[in-house]
Image 1 (cartoon, one colour):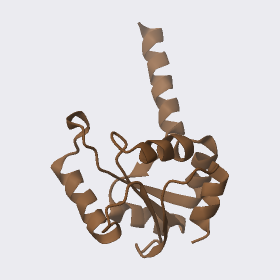
Image 2 (cartoon, rainbow, N blue to C red):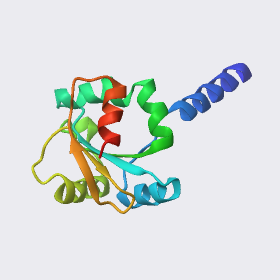
Image 3 (cartoon, rainbow, N blue to C red):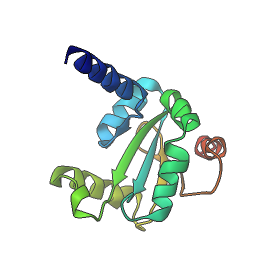
Length: 143
């Protein structure tokens, strides 16, 4: 039993260390971006219904290359818009995401990626592109 608990704790800590940290609050993202002196990458997605969103998630956001680069150069902010009941967000989080959409995604595009400066000003926008993680990083840093 003791060995099981130790193994479990080590596994959890390893996952936490390697996990990509996505923020869900714009104010927290701005604070982190100011502290790190970097830009914010805000993504509007519906990963339980939007095929290009799922591709962007799997091909770019989950890639080791993007994770390594983002760790040092971006604050990541996610505005998820699930449709399936099992993925429903809290009312508070849904309100935050709706507010972000009203300001940054008025057309309702999915996926929609907005690069912001640390004050929340838009530097550029993009969406899903069939490119390598390195090429996607270059797009994000070109703004």
